[in-house]
Length: 141
Image 1 (cartoon, rainbow, N blue to C red):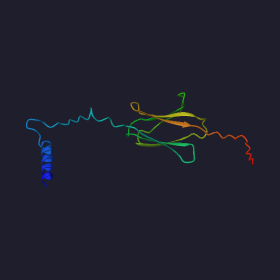
Image 2: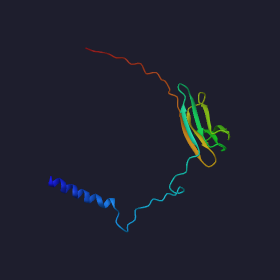
Image 3: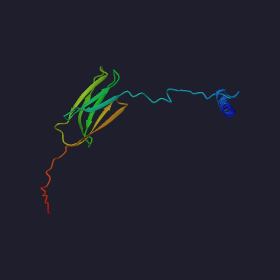
Image 4: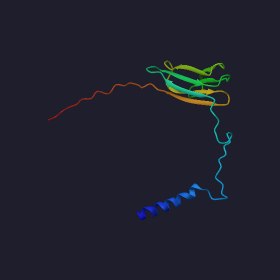
C-alpha cells in the first residue's frame, strides 16, 4: 500500500508542472492567416465515370455561376476531337462522350476556366481475341 501511494505521488508530481505553466513563460500562440496557411479552394470540380455495358464516358463539372468553362477532348498527339463551352448560367453540367466509333488511343479531357485547369486521362483499348493453336493430349501406359 505504501508503495502504491508513493508511486501515485511521483506520478502526480510529474503531471503538475504540465498543468500549471511556469510564471513568466507564455503559452505558444497559434496565428492563423487565411492567405498563407489554407490552400485556395478549387473553383472547378470534375468527376468522370463510365456507363455500364457501353463505351460512354460521363463527365460531371461543377463550377461557380457566371464563370466561363470549357471542356476539351484531346487525343495523344494533342489534336482537339471535341470542345464544348459550358453555360455561364448553370453551376452543374453533365456531358456524355461516346467512344464507340473511335480507334484505340489515350485521350485527355481538359476542363479549364482560364486560371484553373483539370486534366483527366482515358485509355481506350480493345481486347483482341485470338485462337489458340490446336494441341493434342496423349496418354501412354
